[in-house]
Length: 115
Image 1 (cartoon, helix red, strand yellow):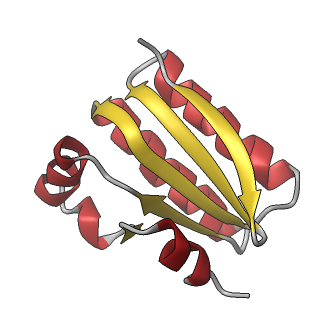
Image 2: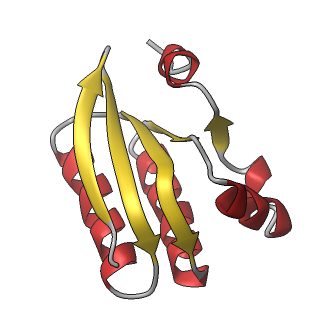
Image 3: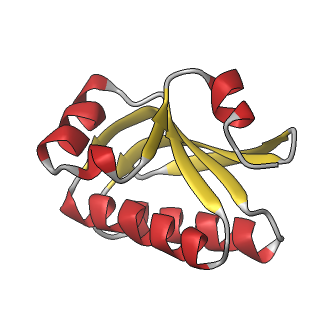
């Protein structure tokens, strides 16, 4: 199953609800395009909801880091929300847990973005 996403706005924050697998090929390209699309529309506050992402491979991790860097370089913020246990462990093992701002609660995540 490849990755799918929906986009919604809450208090000036663009939330990408991701589902499926972020893997080499479709998943990572879909993520890249989604983030690029949001930036093109002028949104600088992006929250990736990973609640329904069941698997990320090394290519997917690279895409997450790339998305984070791209957003940061354009003066924006990218944060992660609702990590599954599998994804949480993966970020711990790869030490990427310290790179990303990770939230468990949508309301506090939205409130954490700079106004």
